[in-house]
Image 1 (tube, each protein chain N blue to C red):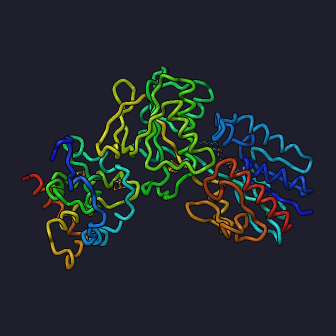
Image 2 (tube, protein in one colour; image 1 turned 60 degrees about the horizontal axis):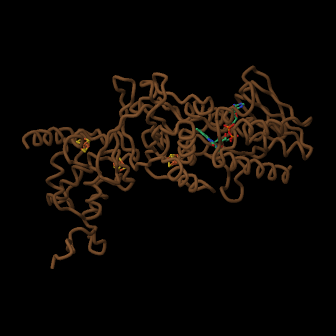
Image 3 (tube, each protein chain N blue to C red; image 1 turned 60 degrees about the vertical axis):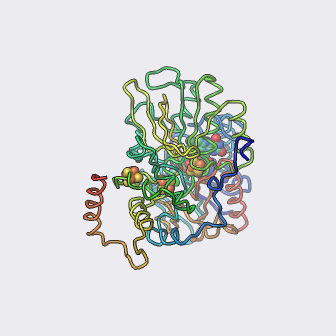
Length: 335
Length: 136
Ligand SMILES: Cc1cc2nc3c(=O)[nH]c(=O)nc-3n(C[C@H](O)[C@H](O)[C@H](O)COP(=O)(O)OP(=O)(O)OC[C@H]3O[C@@H](n4cnc5c(N)ncnc54)[C@H](O)[C@@H]3O)c2cc1C
Ligand code: SF4
Ligand code: SF4
Ligand code: SF4
């Protein structure tokens, strides 16, 4: 049986590793963080069913306990090169690793909200990102800038996605439903706090997403405003004032809120960007490019180099896991 | 006739069967980036003129799109061409050019032979436009 190196121990890399190992392949998995699943353990509850993110992380991490899987944690892969018919990887400490096959599962990174200066992230304390919000929900500590219970929380969609000015034309696909999920969590913890979601279009494409949207209106009183917030500014008492157009009314609006939550999009991670570029398989916006979106979505233009998960494009966890299984099937059928 | 407290008013309905697209076609030819507009209202939200008057640039360009030209020429005079809207537009619509060209088309300037000004002439033209606005 051939050997395979998997770069990235997120849901994608782990699911593929488990299947390949179960079929007798010798698997080495590389993760730059100290522990796997860093993009899952920083979440609280997961759409669409409010599953506990740490439970899921635990279930996935269990799958790594196979004698055929070697884990290399705190190991960032910084370059890859061909080695005859196989591949050689180099890590940040200068160590090299060889294998017959390679699976890229280097995932995404959240959009850096500093890049939208007009929205005031890191300038006004009341402006936070969706990731900060995940942590506040998880720690049951949703607080305004002076450590008190917020009276109002505003969520703003499409920060760093669908935005010419950020250079990202694409839709990140899951921030719409994430905002609804977070607004519901907020209302569960703080029923008296007002929750508003400002959107350009609401994309509730997945199973149960539309129902979640409806539930947020019906059971939690979450309010929706169609309009893009153009700027945020701080008030003397530590709140945030926002400006938008209420496009359904056709009137400009202003609103003061305790927290403005920026729903940041998903960008290709640094690992994805660099390694895809080095392998010559870089697609749009720094994501890795498969050779065919219908039939060969796990194959790259390089023989023996496979792709899975959000290193290709934004995906939910369910989609990521399905894609990892598809990658494993593809690899087993060719190896 | 008006027994029921209402009457059927022609003007309240946009009749898509009667909208002519020649002015819009011209506008899109001169300002192709306007094809990308998704009506998000970012332009209106950022507009300093819109904060204090009933000037609403998103409504104006949407009305133009729908062939509802009544009163637009007058309304467009409130725009100071400051370009703030252009900075926030998520779709990269060239709003300043859009506004200038809506004005031209509505004023009946011969846009068929008229070509957009060269880059170096735009500043002079904007300065002139600002002067005019000050007088209004
Ligand atoms: C705010 C927010 C909320 C979300 N909530 C949900 C939700 O409720 N439900 C849901 O289904 N999805 C949710 N998601 C999406 C979810 O996080 C992703 O679908 C999932 O993490 C993708 O898994 P992945 O394995 O493709 O990538 P990742 O999770 O990004 O994993 C990639 C791994 O590769 C590692 N890596 C990268 N480069 C290197 C390198 N050079 N060397 C070694 N290791 C490297 C990274 O450290 C990381 O551990 C949310 C996303 C965001 C931004
Ligand atoms: S999923 Fe929603 S919030 Fe995210 S980029 Fe797409 S439209 Fe915007
Ligand atoms: S900001 Fe741009 S996309 Fe949004 S309504 Fe204005 S012109 Fe259209
Ligand atoms: S250019 Fe005109 S429409 Fe745009 S922000 Fe300035 S005044 Fe408003």
